Amino acid sequence: MAQANMPFYAIMLMLCMSVPVWAQEPARVLAALEYDEKSTSTLRYGDLRITLSNLPVASSSGNGHVDHYRLGVDAWYGKRPAFSMHLDHVDESPPYPDPTVKVMWLDRASAMPQVVFTYSDAVGQCCNNASIATMDATGHWHVIETGGLLLDFEYEFLDLNGDGTAELVSTWLYRYCLGLCGPSFRGVVVEKLIGRQLRDVTKAEQYRSFVRGRLRAEEDRNGPRGFEEDLHSNSFLWGWVPQKAMVGELSDAWRTMLADYDHSEANFPETLAEHLLSGRYITSQEKRQLDLLSASGTVRP
Image 1 (cartoon, one colour):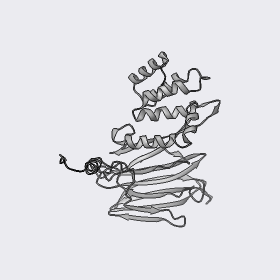
Image 2 (image 1 turned 90 degrees about the vertical axis):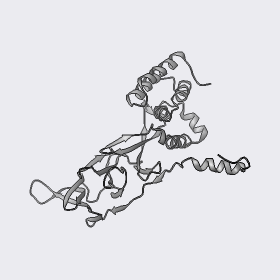
Image 3 (image 1 turned 90 degrees about the horizontal axis):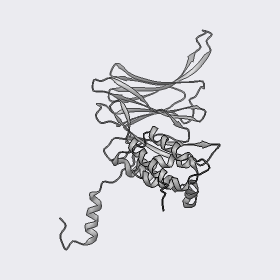
């Protein structure tokens, strides 16, 4: 307990120091392997040996022509093969950005740090990808695929709670079109590697401050006036309302939507509610509450 004569500023300092700092620090990279288009790159980390290469694959016709190229990560643990991660593509060099291999902790329950392979396959506007190799308790390695992001976005590996392991942070473009597409909303998803699974932890209380910070930054991207205008766009609300739901601000977002959405699409609230439920942003009980708000015509002041 603070002494009665302790200065006020000292008491406030103690209170501030007792609150954990929201880290948002980049993951600590234990070892990294950069791509070399002219040769195979090799990395050793303890008993783990990893190679990164981009090799021609001959045509099956037997005419000696190159059919395509294979960008690949191959690893050995001790003398045994551990895992392989490959991408087949038609170009002599892999698409931009250059692929990388990094060793970092994503799950401390594993006996070894994880190996993260990032690359782009550049099919249309997609994708920046990340593949994660992790070892289980029996010494077997498993590869987890992340799914891919639009080329405008990259996966971030951030230590969000200061525990020395990284969370996987991805940015998604939520787009809803009625005729012509309007403003879109960039939402954030936080995933945690647990064993052999990447689990969506965006709604977890310990990450709420981070997600809310990204939400506010997206709201401020075009300034206050721009944000007020965006609220009249159903394509913007399509992503904004789910992100608000993830940080416990669903009711406020729903009332704002009811007041500001483009009423030329009369059934938009019903469509949005189904989107929230099917995407698991809300529960069935929460959807019933939203239906009641819509039916009552309740909007924000």
